[in-house]
Length: 87
Image (tube, rainbow, N blue to C red; front, top):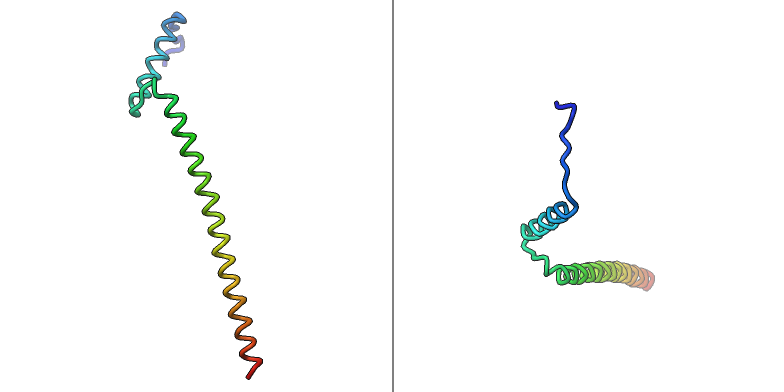
């Protein structure tokens, strides 16, 4: 292994160009254009709100199902107890 690594000098302008080119290539590789960034951000905001809404609805639906099961169980127990007591 080389103990004296070479140092590369690059201008700020060239570094900026390389970074910009890399970002454009990265975006292109996932099917996006740099001009679409605002739309992509809105898409992510929409997806996040959909996910959060889904989580809230799922939680409330689960709570409703548990409540219905508890109510049905209590109702059956009360009806069975009444039937047992009336005989």
